[in-house]
Image (cartoon, rainbow, N blue to C red; front, side):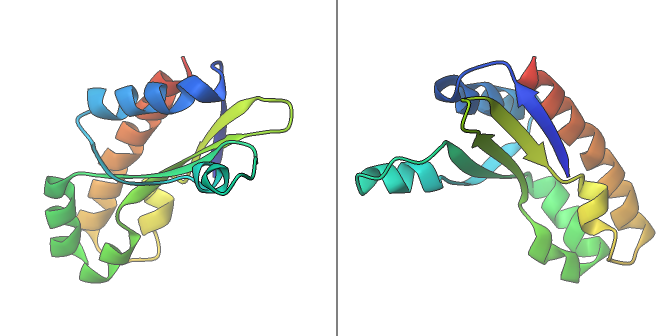
Length: 126
């Protein structure tokens, strides 16, 4: 797992990550926030959000390479806020996620996605 500190407050973290995802031509497939859910019930917890990211051309290639790997999509970024208010962006390298599955084509795809996810993370934490 890669964990990077963001230099923005929680209120700006999602906007910054969203822009980085879009700038690298990836799609936001899902978003779930335990902190937003808790807030709707009147409970306050530190910021917490899971963002599913993928793109259809990658999905088609992934399924062509190994249909069993489809359970791993979308790949995820994880935003968290600690007790001191510091925000972190975490993710697992796609190559690590897809490593248990066979196929050279899938390994090549994972390498492409490793670079894209690294670039997204780098831009989000600037």
